[in-house]
Image (tube, rainbow, N blue to C red; front, side):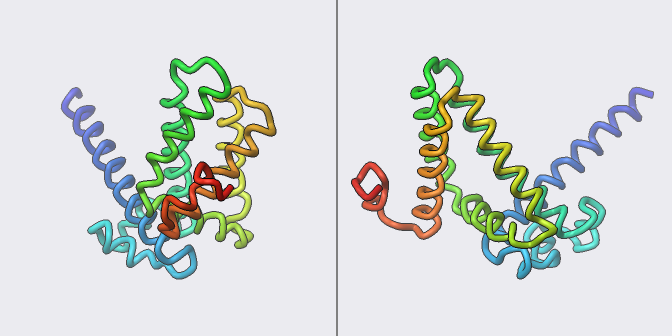
Length: 181
C-alpha cells in the first residue's frame, strides 16, 4: 500500500509540475500575442508537450488563460505578503510592497501578461474572472497594508504606471520619483 501511495504522490507532483510548466509557457505566449492570437499549439510547443496534453490539464484555452492570470496575480500577492512581514505601519508595508513589485517588474512576460489580461477583459467570457483577480489583489493589498482607500488608489495607480514603463522598456527618467508623476 505504501508503494502505491508513494507512486500516487510522485504522479501528482509530476502532474502539478507539468501544469505549472504549461502555465509558465502560456504566460509567455499570451504576453506576446494576447488571448485571441495565441494558439494552444504554440503554448504546447513552448512547454515541450503535445497539444492534446494541454487539454488533459485544462478543459479549454479560456481556462488556461485564467490559470495563467491566477498564477501571475498569486506571484504578486506572495511577494507582497513576504514584503510586509515585520513591518508595522501602513506606510512601511506599502513601501515594502512597492519594492517587492519593482523586483517583479524584471519579468517582462508577467508584466505584459497583466496588460493582456486587462485588455482581454473586453471579452465577455473573460471579463468577470479577470476583474475578480484584480479586485481580489486590491483587497489583499488593503488588508495586508492597513492603508487608507486613498493610499491604496495611489499605490495601485503607481503600480499601473510602472507596468507601462516596464512593458515599454522606458528609461528610468519616466519613474515617478524622477518628477514625471
